[in-house]
Length: 312
Ligand code: AVI
Image (cartoon, helix red, strand yellow):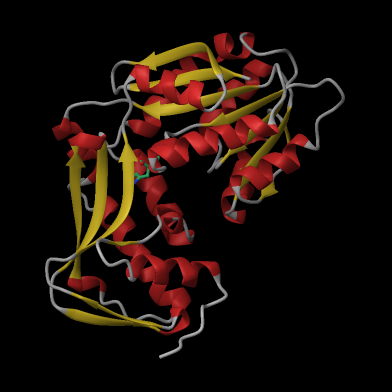
């Protein structure tokens, strides 16, 4: 039977992911609606999830050195700025620069502008990462260099080949002398990772389940969230945490705005996110493959997190 391709990108991607014959998937970038973004802020405060605090600690401890390693007075663009709190110290160390936070969430951009207007000349850009970067680059003054921030180990949520292609995409928007500060979560004991992504308070479970809630709200679907559970695995072969939603029953879900009825077996999972963890040599390989060279690296040993400064 012919069924039209939905024109809404979210609907199309949900449909594509849930009709995959081998493993059902949903793209993790759809976690971040208003509820998901609030849940992510809560995750960042959990004692078990040290990643965000480690990222902020490295920047706080080394803001002066990082600022000293890039040409003076750069235009700063941040990909996926969130609320901008961890960027504050770096912007202070850079002096009053023009700062373009790039995010798809207007709420995150507004919070970021509130937080950082006292220390920078803030120009929020509501766009996807590379489109936003292109727009930010158009704000450069003649001869001005650019510093791009991609913090929080969001690069770890890309498949390895997509991570390389993405870094290369950033590099292509930049010019010689420009820099990228890349945050990456390092490999660590599996038990510590499982605690971080399957916290006893259940915040990460709620964050994961909210993806189904979002599909219900935006695509008129009838997922019963109580018939799914949060499942976290460490896949050692590819050094990543995988988040899944496991069905607790044989069930049939209707998603009218994606023109889809999907059958899900008891025990079957929907893979919702991969969080890759890095070794230092893998960061070097990734940088090289993306067309950058490493100019500095600062590490938080307490959690296991690296901030790496890459030059074009
Ligand atoms: C945004 N990103 C780097 C987080 C991570 O750790 O991969 C997303 C997250 N998923 C569950 N907890 C946090």
